[in-house]
Image (cartoon, rainbow, N blue to C red; front, top):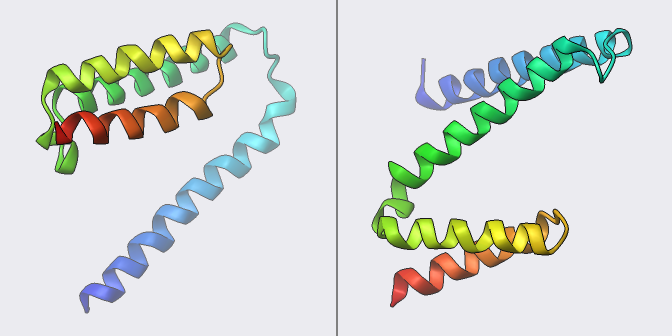
Length: 108
């Protein structure tokens, strides 16, 4: 099997897995209360997984991000968290600022 066929097969398989889980979630979401313990548990698991991935990206980066110093990555994170809080939990502004800050600070 050619590598392009393997890539296409991998994309199809991951897409199906993603769409099936989302479809099943949409079907069962009416039965789960937002205030229930199970919903809060899933919410905590989702946020902790995201926090772990972000922590890994900052401490052990891969690719282009690995070319920047740890101090710069942490400084950009702290600045963007402050911007996030000041802008009343707006996600767009800190995202744009983080890209600009990281690119400017790594070139210095």
